[in-house]
Image 1 (tube, one colour):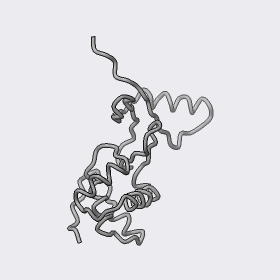
Image 2 (spheres, rainbow, N blue to C red):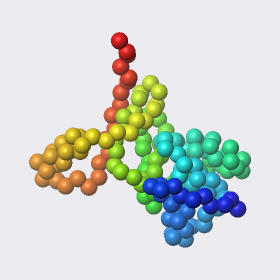
Image 3 (spheres, rainbow, N blue to C red):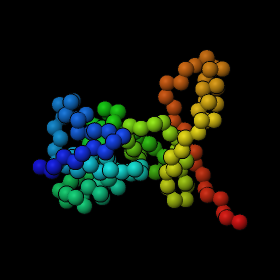
Image 4 (cartoon, one colour):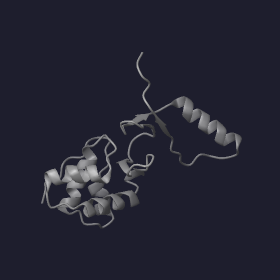
Amino acid sequence: MAKRQKVPAGKPDYVKELSKAGIRVTRPRRVIIDILTETDDHPDAMEIFRRAVQVDKSISLSTVYRTMKLLEGFGAIHRHAFGSGPARFENAAGEHHDHLIDLDTGDVIEFKSDRIEALQAEIAQALGYDIVHHRLELYGRKKASG
């Protein structure tokens, strides 16, 4: 069995969450969890699988999908469907942020805007609502220099 890595500050402890729920943390799940804990990008299941098989060739794509579904069910990760591409994942821990998706490269840029947050709250209040959750995704192309 792989040695449990220390969870970096500010990162979710997926092993603890699964263990609390009575779900066995197998070696393949631990490898996938380590990848998610260490990543700062928004990988899709295929990218997580590519990274996982570099550590343990016995990990299957179906194990990746099942693990992601489990973690999503616990609210430990967020699934994003950016445009028509495959679902991508990110840690649910951390501060709220929004996303800008580069249509040419597929890059996902995280950003936070106090002005956008205030405007959303103002609109919701004017319509008689309290915002419970929201997700903002902007899609664009980088402007040509010059």
